[in-house]
Length: 255
Image 1 (cartoon, helix red, strand yellow):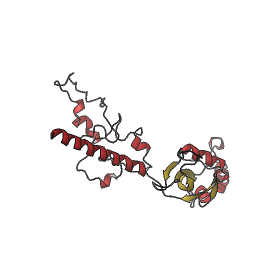
Image 2 (spheres, rainbow, N blue to C red):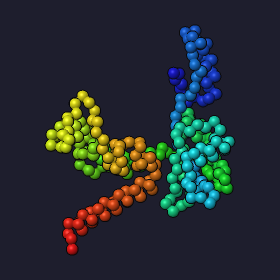
Image 3 (cartoon, rainbow, N blue to C red):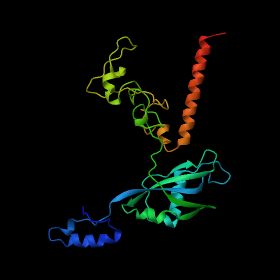
Image 4 (cartoon, one colour):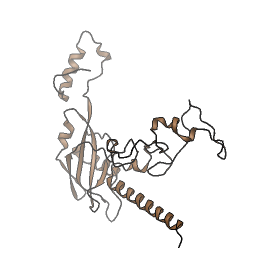
């Protein structure tokens, strides 16, 4: 690695290559061509319809955006660092905000070339804006629920990401009931050897499917850039919980 006293530009690379390869202490045949360090730049695109297909309620997809970018010359030589992420401007809007991460250099040359540029998307004119990193909806590493950070979690103690019991995830083998012997169960449960990882499966504490709460196969993780989806989902969960409580109360107090 070569250290410079200022941010290197693409035009500086030929000078660096020449100096390195002409050095007496370096075998030029073993030296690769120099390249700038890569970093990410964060951009957002506004002015794109959320339902881009005529006479259809089909939503804008990441594949649609990738196709649009390939067709517009301002994105020539631009490489995406991840798939585009799409959200509605607001719940009642028919327009979208598209977040894109691009590979860039430390001087943010690629981002500067794109910011405030406009391009056509069908009959619409889209505009590229600068953005900060969009982390999406946070997942608490203490209780494993979505929507708040670990530092702002209000529960006392911690929950296990695997079994959702009141112990830290790294202590699951020590405190989890599933790996302890229980001769009273049918069939009797054998103890898991301490040298072995826990072989048991549990339901996700968020979606109730068969994976851990931090799994990237969880619907909550797949929608972790969509705050609207999370808000709606937790509203459904609260409504179902209230309905269950009412049913239990009515069942225990027959008329």
